[in-house]
Length: 335
Image (cartoon, rainbow, N blue to C red; front, side, top):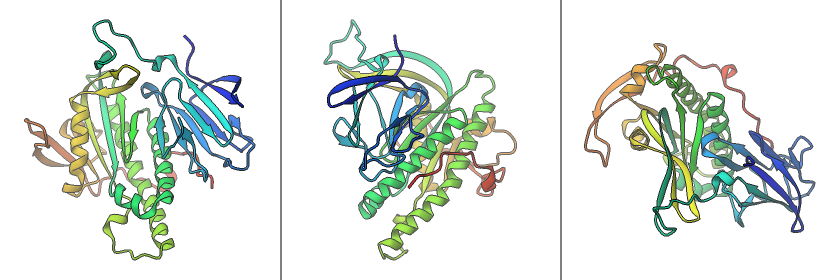
């Protein structure tokens, strides 16, 4: 069975078919994988990205006229399914990946939900969330959408650079993971996830500057605590499964498990505890000695019967300290 690819369609006629690599850039620039020589297309307009077990996502790179999937303008990253139509200016692409087609399970009908392709793994899970997303979207509109698109683009590059995979991005949140090949010693994957989190928190400062610029453009005061770009991050370690969930023609490949649920619950507690990063004690115990944590005892997140021992990254301890020159290189923004 062929891998993921796109058909290039002009005036309703398929012109050619292109296999997708890890990244597939679309834009007016001659360096793009697909050059669209149209005045309404930005030099770096959009990109299709392979995110491993999560499949492919299409990103709008902050273009003026937008990227459309199945007739709807996208913001940030959007997962692709077999047969999705992507429109950039006058260019139309059809995403093909038979692995994303609905799977037929004998014991289910199309009207019933299915959960297939189950396989277990040990993994470090990262959940991040942009705080005050709704209020900033209402306040800054499309300009903030462009910033969010850029944030997720950089975040995914960082996660991949550190060996992780993005499972999904939804609105203001992101779910990623690092599979652990040797469950008896997950220290390397824990370290990679912490390095990723540290860089995300470092890069957050630049996006705060960008949001401050939006406030200045709007000639509004700076006393609104809900108009700062801020994120919360949670890290957990445990067993998860890769499943294809859904029904009929609506199915998606995703990760599930208690460590995934706990990660979402912990991220919600970061604001309450006034800490940018919370982790389970299991993560803290497997972290290399250079990472410093503060024991916060046990908490019982909403919806759980059992308490969980958690720790916070030492406020002095985005450690080891990170100089700007040490940041993982990501693709620069293009106006």
